[in-house]
Image (tube, rainbow, N blue to C red; front, top):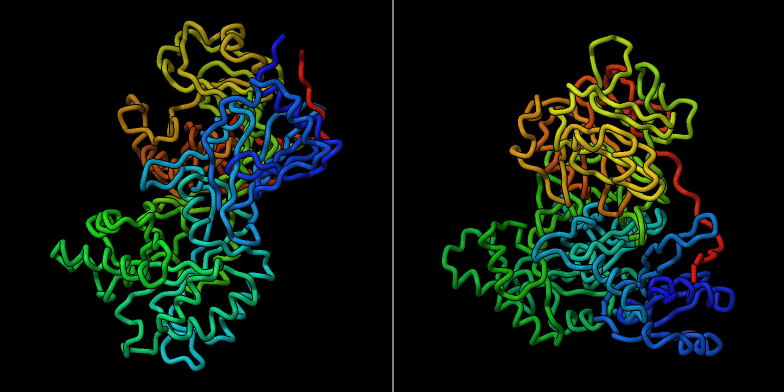
Length: 611
């Protein structure tokens, strides 16, 4: 039987693992490292000569039709994920190349490359990729660095170096604007704790103090410059062209435009031509003097609106940064690529504790990522507080009677759990559900009374097996029997009917989609579960009252691609590691959705390839 390209790739990784260990393979524009069944991207280094013959021995169809190149400014390591001796897929993590030069990746398997190319596809310009929403990247903003402070936002060289030491001691990885923008566009994962260092206005202190310290620590930094200050006595001493040219030639340094004259508010420039001049002339002057492309813009004092953003886009910039005295937002919490938020340096100690590069990117040929560790996150999106647990392997428990979520999960390996499907309130201790229910905890399928099914038509039917999760519209004529449910998903172990879709295919659902569901528009505590953009199962609750539409909008922006409503109001409950996450005592429930420990991956990968 002819093997698929995917099977051949797995067989290839198995062949080279014993000989090569971890090796670098130029698999196109994302350099790949290969080893123990893994492929990693990082520079144009080829496999050792003893491995090379194995590549040439592969059939021509495997090597044919080279895919388009994928470019990355990060070193991408792609390692196998294996369980019980079988390779399930690949996982990608990133690091910073020491020379700060873009790396390239060309895959020899067109199927493999196309799948990863789809994963790395840019979001429609100038949107932020939904997968990037799972990360928390602080962009720290500095103004002048001076020997003696004059105003509250001044920083001394000693204080600045203390910040760099804090970053180093806490294991953070400073990244460049290029790497940040790539992440925001494609969702490519960043190192575990990324941070961006930015410096406004071109002060002399940037050259005298900041630049030497960045070189000392090997950290990249971005400097926003406006030409009217260069070589001119304007306010505090500024850099001259020679100093900026020296910095611009260093791969550690990114130069951004900060307009020509640093007007106090670009929104107040009503003449479109004058607004365009501030954008385009600054870009032209900097490029002419420095001999490098100027890709990014920083709004003076952070002030912008849609018209100003459009002017920046028209001037040819790829992204633009702002600032706000009212909110400290991480990069992916920004509206779009032309309104990227920064955080004042005074918040350094606070925000670096929350820095997170997002989960590793995974590719599973036939399923979701049930091998990720279970992590708890508390965040606020669109003013909606959210408490979420993501990762692990999902399951459900249909208890014999009602109890607190913490009590139902007690005695099981479950790490996190949320209250599950809707249930009947007819009797105080009844475990009767609204709709059919099937739980792997009991192995039983409990059908629903026929008279109750018509109201459930079209609601999300949740299906779980050992590899994946599916949400499909409930059909009363098909899905009230074990056979009907099993026909929808091979090996299904858990099934129940949820309230409504909150997020579908990454899009929040409008009020019309709730089809008159009672209380969907009421402000109340909400429970939900779904799949995030990293293919991990997620359970969670709102931290305050919210209606279903606003919750869906917040969840989509928080990085969920699928989310359904669970029993809410007084029933809403989330438990993590034996502790309730709620500020009140919820109503007892008979059904929960739980996240079990992640599927353990083997240290050595044995690829199972059938002939």
